[in-house]
Every structure is written in C-alpha cells, then in structure tokens.
Image (cartoon, rainbow, N blue to C red; front, side):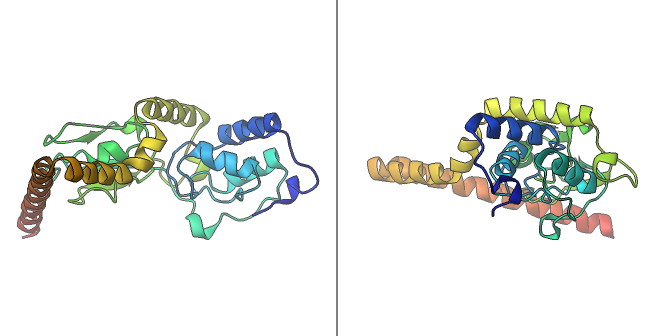
Length: 235
C-alpha cells in the first residue's frame, strides 16, 4: 500500500526513524495487535514507510486518526471497520474460582498485568491492564471477562498520555524479558526441539511426549471441573 505523503520523494533512514517515533508516541500503546501488526511500534514503522493506513487503531478511535493525520499529512478518514470499532476502554478480570493456573494468560499479556504461578490462581493488576484482550482467546476455561473502565468514554477520551506512557514502558520491560522474535519463533522452535530429540534420543522424545500428554490431560481435567462448577452454579 502506498500513500501520497511519500509519493514525491523517498525519506532518508533518519527521517523515517524520526517519523516512526513520533507516530508511535501518538498511539495509545495498548499493544492489542488489532492494527494487524505485533505491537504499536511495528504499526508506527509501517505507517512511516507508507505500508499501512492511519485508520487501523481502534483504541485510538477517531481522535487517534486525527493525531496521526496531523503527523503524517495523510487525510483524516473513518476508522477501518476491518480492524475493529472505537469503544470504551476495558479491563480484564479473572474469575479465580474457575482459574486453573495454566499461566497462558500471563504469557499473552504484553504489559505483565497478570500475576500468578503454575496451578495457582491468577489475578489482573487493574492499573496495568490496557484492555488489549490478548488473554481472552488463550484461556482454556473461559474464566476471563472484560469490564468497562471508562464508562461511555471511548478512544482517547477514555485513555490518557500518562496511561499510554505507562503501558509503553511496561511493554518495553516485558520485551526485555521476552523478545518479540522469541514469541514468534516459539511454535517452530518447539517443533524443531521435538524433532531433534526424536532424532538423537528416542527415549527422551518418548518422555517428552508423555509429559505433553500428561499436561493435556491435566488441562482437560481442569476444564471438566470448571464446566461442572458452571453447571452447578447455573442450577
């Protein structure tokens, strides 16, 4: 995708870097990936390079589009429906009675707003939650829900520069511990390790497979207990 602002000349690397930094600073920093990029900085870089539109950030809403238009020189346009809708800022809550302690939500949270340990209940640190919703699909027992944290206010009216800065700083700290490339390569790396183990030590591969099956069985059992608790509560 090409945009008119960059049609006449090709900006220098330094100019693109500066532009990307200014765009990133204008984003709400929820790190929700709804823009289609792995984080806000990647989206900002794509906009600076003319590879993405300024209408792909639902958390920023209409005001966010206007902010990006002022920085890039692009025309203000409606938020892209393909990427979501402007809505109130939300905060995640974990029903601790159903939480099985799988730690999947902890790994998914970009701002380390969820605390807990394996097989222990988890909880959300509300001030650090950006409402990114990345914890929702990974929960195997569906024990996470979203509540509005801003009433009827949406977009930047529900956010603030201070919250955005806090979220960015926490995300940067998170990435120091878990580099983005490690997350992207996790699946393929695990498969490669499994293949290597099978090649060099069939016995070790068998033990690893048994461990994986035991983990799956434990999660399945926990999910069944959660289901039974829900049915009991519904009566």
